[in-house]
Length: 280
Image 1 (cartoon, rainbow, N blue to C red):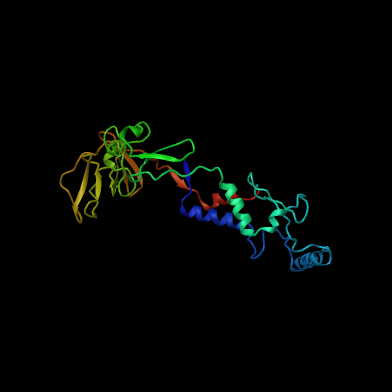
Image 2 (image 1 turned 90 degrees about the vertical axis):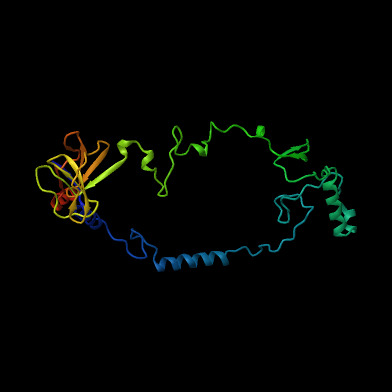
């Protein structure tokens, strides 16, 4: 006989698991070796003392940088200085010139020898361009069909969606429509009961309710409140039938319903759970 864990058993097992652990105390971790207020005050005092009483008395502040300092360990050494372009000499003679004049010399030397921009290309914005050895755009043109590579081997055309030899589409619910699924996974039919012996149809029903009649091996659908249809239909082989009264599943075997789920199962009891989780 097989066992399973039902809703009540799951809740009981969870309560046993929760009871087996120590609850976390607010403001603390799971260890008792916590940093107390007294210890923290001591650490704060030590940090303050180290930062004031033991600070160097000759500590330098507001050190002025020196462009001409070449010793990289000196306090006034300037890191990441820009490279002076060729043709520009920085010496004492520049000290007599204004700051703007020096900057202008540096800028002029930086752009000296650079290529000039090309003339404006006549026409609208183009998707295909050509450029010269300097990387400057020299011409532009519209894309042609021959410029677009054949991507049929990588991407699927939209026209193939939901079509034969194409790809399945998705409905508004994000699922593949049943019409595009093979028949053997097409549907599950819920029956209010599956009669396994000769008996009368269920007395209570609502429009659309379905039941399987054991006597004539046919499916009947209610046509109104407590009114069963007079004509039945043979069950379909491609469907799975679920008995809502027992939650057992069936398939149509051609002459009778064949049960495909086992009823030989019982729920695990609380006593059995206690024995499983009992400490050794």
